Length: 265
Ligand code: BTN
Image 1 (tube, rainbow, N blue to C red):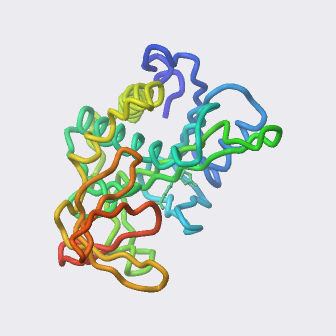
Image 2: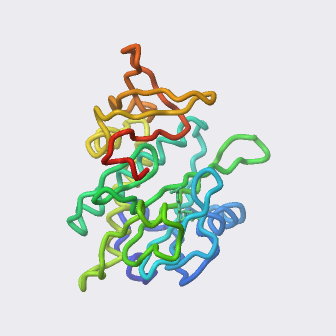
C-alpha cells in the first residue's frame, strides 16, 4: 500500500487522516491502540501481513494469506457510549460492502454482527475496541480493525477454518488498487462516523443481511433457543421472532444458522 497514493484520494474533510503502511505487524489493532494513547490525530494503519492478528472473543485471526488487507482505523469519539460500539461495527461493515461493490464490482453479504461473506464463505471480519480515557473513565476513541481475505489458501489451518473461510479472488485482478478500495471505504465510513445519529448505514446493512427469515438458534444461559431473523434494530441489535411468536432483540453472543446453507458456521 502506497501511503502517498492513498493520501491523494482521501475524502474531503479527512485529508488530515494519518496513514501508516507496513509490510508486517503483529496486530494493526494493537499498533493503533498504542498510537492513539500517544497522539491526538486519527489514523489508518495498514499491513500486508499480521503475525498476531486478533479476532473477537479472544480468537486469533489468520493474517498471513498470499494477499490480505489488514487495517485498523483509530478515530476520536468523545461523546460515545459503550452501546454505540456495535453501531461502529455495522457502519464499518456497510462501508466496506459498499466500497467492494463500487471498486471491485463484487457483492458481499453480512452475518450479524461482524462477518462479511462472499459466495457463502467468510472473507472478512471486524473487531471494534473502545479506549477509555483514565481521567474521565469514558470511552474517548475507537480502534476498528478489519481483515479482508483477498487471495490465498487456508489449507495450513484446521479443517473447520478451511471449509468456512474464503477469499475474494484466486488471483488478484491486474487493475486491483488497494488505495482505491480504501479511499472508497473511508468515504462511506466518514459520512457514517460524522453523522452517526442519522444511522444511514442500518438500511444498507439490512439489505445485505444473511439469513433474513432463516431459522437460527442462539445460546442463552446454556440453553438453546430457536428463532427466525427479522432484521436489525436502530441500536444495531438483531431482531428475531422467537418460538412464542414474539419479537426479541439479541445484543451480544453469537447466532448460529440452522439451515444447511449456513451449517458451515
Ligand atoms: C473476527 O472475525 O472475529 C474479527 C477479525 C478482525 C481482524 C482484524 S485484521 C486487522 C485488525 N487487527 C487485528 O489484530 N484484528 C483486526
